[in-house]
Image (cartoon, rainbow, N blue to C red; front, side):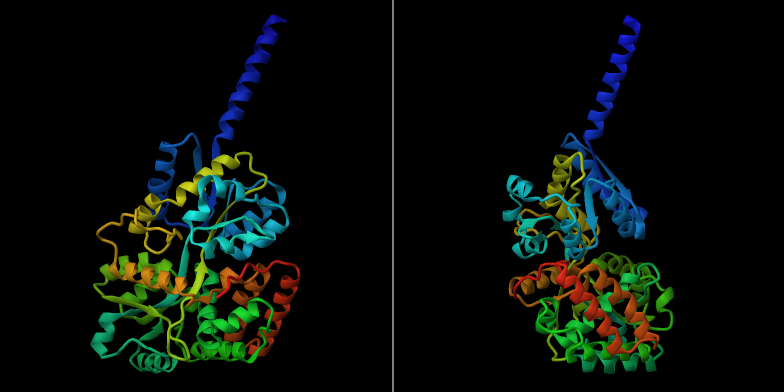
Length: 433
């Protein structure tokens, strides 16, 4: 009897110890990342965080299937502690269904209201409560091969008419105008839809549509999709769009001179830096020109951090998120991985950047920050459209390009899906201009 009690006590203590250790573990599912990028996250987040805390941070790299796997896991309550979504459009439905923990308590504890730019905090609110913080803010623009431009005597375009005239000259010279593809990420389609909507329809009409004031079938949006489709039909995206990868491969095509320009986001700076050195090319970056001429900077949030309502270690998850939003992480990760970790901190005075950071990256980030502060920005679809609407926007535009669906039918389906999600309260918060 004594021996049985001793064994039972030992087993009980082992279970308690194991459970206590498990309580100290924080799990985070991350999207696709190369081995080099995984090492950067480990060196700049995991190791320094664990060195200064009681928690064991475990990051599971789920690749391009993260979104699907996360949806299934969240429904069953078996997901990670830190919920890492592709953008604010995913937050409202999860918060609405009770899958996310309100972060107001931790925001007060850690002073996030004072440390993070207000417009991005507003994007993470639902029904008056804070449910998400943005990992990075970004914009879309136009990278171009300055060395190639100098060789041909070309100038950077300052209007859509100039952009199209330049693209036509590139085709005549056997050069693909746009380095682009979606072989690794079908969502790359919406980068170009976002650019067209903001450049042609304009940010004011975008805001009206996002708040339900006008329909997505309105004339400005038809003109935008028609113009985007004309670029596709004229071959601006090249012959191999569906087999070209949106990241490294596209940057290689642009910096090697096989393509002249690359419409992409500020997250591409890392690849551009690598391949411009490899191909000995000088690269420029400008705002994507609008129909009226002045560039538009569509504002985007690439990913968001939340905490699962089912998490058994919410304090640990909050501690990890708080560490990410620090000058140390901003400086170290942006120095090594430019464009992907532009954390929206209010004060960057304590940030230290490496000497080898591309001046072009610093200039672009300063220009974006100025535009946001002045309210001069547009809207990226992955940030401001609800999930079902955004999914159709991505998939449906291919049907337009391949002449299977008309612009009118595409926008009609887009608007129908949006109106339903607007009624269901799934549209992300749209900040006032």
